[in-house]
Length: 438
Image 1 (cartoon, rainbow, N blue to C red):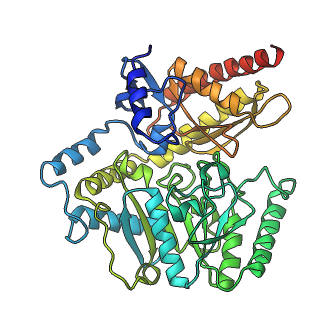
Image 2 (tube, rainbow, N blue to C red; image 1 turned 180 degrees about the vertical axis):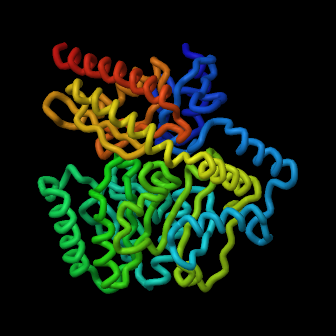
């Protein structure tokens, strides 16, 4: 029996059956440092998933842990009913960085809650419950965000307070326009959006879209798609919500926000963020134009959003990220990692596609017949763990490996992780071949 088995059994006895655990023998992670974590048995792993893109800078980053410790020693909680210096300072910086004019910031505790708040603002401002969302998308687990999630694996109910219309374009290599070149792909998707609006009844509130679909397998449209969409949306007065929960803070390397790859028609009306800004602390939020943010006429607060401890952590983390140019590091080291992964994929039949940007890499796996292979992804995850590497998975068929290390990743660690992943993929390919012949 593994050391984690008793804890796994206790977990299953009291937690929901739908609360997933990675691995045949789930891990209990006890501590971390830099880009590494350790399990309860003392084994060390190179972390290429960062708690689902949440440990953005590094495990146990001294600047963040110091800020948390010092603030915890003063006061843990106040709520938004009181002024908090860290919350105001972080809001000022986020508003300035967002690119949204006359921006206001509302802090939440998660990306789900941030997207939920953005949907509340957009539907109230426009007086409509109709939302445009992208196919294959994921926006959270609340009742409203499940209702705008286009990935059926993460949408457990068809019930929703919103009427959602799903738009083409979030996945470049699939769908009726996949065979077109980038320019014609964008034109076709924009024309389809215009046509869809003709089918909508009355006023549509907003389009919500991830610049790079996270849970969807790190898929992305050609640069400029959302700029073309923006032109259509503006003609109809429809708001644009960019979901930057996984793409924000420079992770894509080329841009600080994912929407900036689609900036030709101006910034979004609302921007949601979470995950990496807290480096493990529970922070989410919405940035919106003042007229949109201030449209609510009822009272509202956030009991835990903008708490003194999380705001201190977020401010220290953002300061570290900017002062150490982690966006530049994501571009440089991420570019090298993607080149290495593409070279590996070229020599393995199990690898269907390697895609990504910066330190967001997706490796889509397929069987010999070219069909999606969730089995290959599951086996690769297990082999990588055995070899000392933690990665994630996603995609519509759960057949894509998701690779998103902390943004302080070094060249040596990128090479080490790529070498481990290559061996894990080879073993998974051998597993599939053995199963086919048995």
